[in-house]
Length: 425
Image (cartoon, rainbow, N blue to C red):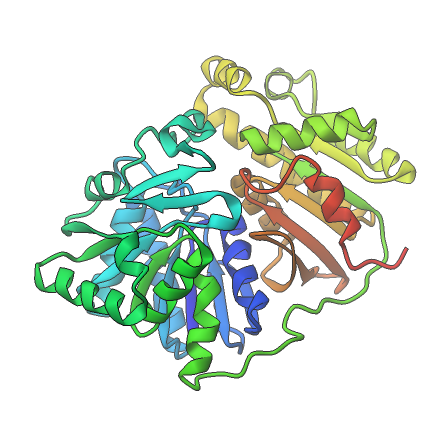
């Protein structure tokens, strides 16, 4: 194994795996740390569900993943978080980074959530989402990790005991050698973590080349785009043009959406505007017993005969706040996650073989309900979202999953994903 990735949520894991496969790297994603050891591959991505867990728990799970990756011989470790740097003042990006650095015995790494293809850029340490600062984007309303500060140096410094500095874009413009020299200078000045600017894929490629031999990288998925070519130049592996091939499957399709991001709200609205079949899960109705996951599942299963069906709890920030005030933040989130996971499991049992899931927390709950332990990574539907394939426990049948971060994809993503699935009708 060349690269071992620790991802803090399930959609983020498929996101970074997609970057590696895209560049010809045989990549396998596992859900949690398997007891029986890791599969053989050029890169293994361990997907955790630690983004919104308590910092101590996130650190413990990440260190367990690190131990498994090191035992399998990983040459480099990559801590993957969201391209919008989702975290709170307490963590979890800083505490996990600190713990990984200590365990690896390294005194320097970078932090770079940039993903220009999806509109996430870092300029002089400030994170932009499209044309607006992170703090002016829809992320300021996130129900669990509201991002109200765009200055990543300041955000990360609040979470870590290590001095944090900045690796500017005009340095990275000079190429890998100049970038390495600047990192050495920052290191000599006592800085332990450098927030790296990135405005383009060229910046990401330069960062990957400059950092390919660091013990630890922390980033969104963007930096991973350049790592396979950097590894290949060092003779560590040979890129494989067929790395993203999946099987051809038969069966109906469905979409399950729990994300309440602006992007996913637009995707649900587009699906509804097109007159496609959709069923809404209402958290307040679930809480009162007026609606149950089983009744929604029965309706969705029946609707499959007419074509793909969307089951969604996606709502506006105002609606989400109203639900949280009525039944509590944690209770609201858990209730919806459990309901959608139960519905997704029932749809697969009813024969669904293409399943799109929107939202990191929702994706984690769904794959756990399905008992999925490993994913083959296929071609990208859009930047950061690939089709994946897994074998169902018990039946041994294959199912293809598209696990979408809430903020990713255009308005027609759901239909686009189903059109690109590898399925025999």
